[in-house]
Length: 482
Image (cartoon, rainbow, N blue to C red; front, side, top):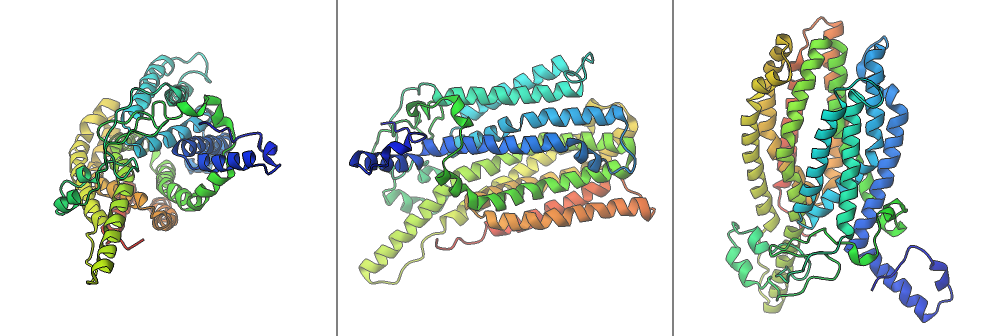
């Protein structure tokens, strides 16, 4: 039964039994998965709107700071840059919604919906680039601005498609086996390589066949819940994301605001300081080479970053299984009077499996990074630019050798909700890495040292090395009783 809790609360002030029953249903509805998803999309929309507005207003100042020049940038460079940033800022609400929607789908173990939505956005983006970038008749529609419009339009189209899928009629539901009714993938399949597989299979964690809960979308035989129709039975309409989220849901998010924001800002600070240093002291050739090298880096990164998303989807289930085994061990010890046997650290074994997968991904992306000379030749014909890109190939290869390990470990930490540790570490990196980068600039401009792309990418490599040691060490630590 759907209960509309967004308006009309004043009609329950009489304290009648009907009003009390309605308020109880509203409180239960606020904690339902569908309601939490809607509130998350609402929070994402408003957060993206505020950040986009802030970037739109401050774009000229930020670009001037990044340039690192004492004199203003030439108008033919400055104006298109400001236009590009401001147009992209308009897409911030859509980008925030897409990020939250993708995370929600992965939490449901639904990989098909984000693949469909983001794939459609990518196709639309490519078509927009081909249609708008090459034309020059209007500076706010074509050229660099055209590339920005192509991305922004693709993001809003993806949001519209995703919202349409959320309210679409669910496909036929299939009864399936699930873990104690909590909707998570059976941990027997998940931990098929763990030595205690036989004991897990004997512990009865496979419940009887149960029909999926109403409004939860169609459930497949692997335990995944489709996002299609997830809000169909809740009278959802796309314009509902424009509403303010419930205060109770906002309070649940507040403890994560500072550590997550610190983590995000700490990641970005390295790239901002790198752009500032390259622009300040490496000239046009260095800036062109840095753009191509960073483009290759960004193109290969998602291969390993998928491990972060996968870990966040599976680690909560591992935590639940570990807690269940520890509670069972405690009950058995109490019933028999014998000393309590140490329950297996399921999460630690799971984490080590993910770290191994991350190392394997790192080797794969390292091999791809060795194709940098070939890729750079496709992007420019300038021999000086190509020479600088080839010079940083060993740095890129070493960075990618560690990147899979870093991403898998970070996903495990996020899945364990160890956001405070990540927040403190990235908060420290926010100051350490820009200061290290600025030493390169100081040496080039004031001490007469030679500074090339290899200088800034060497700093990046040390940053990657520190993250791999800190993240993997933390992720592999035994899990304490919660």
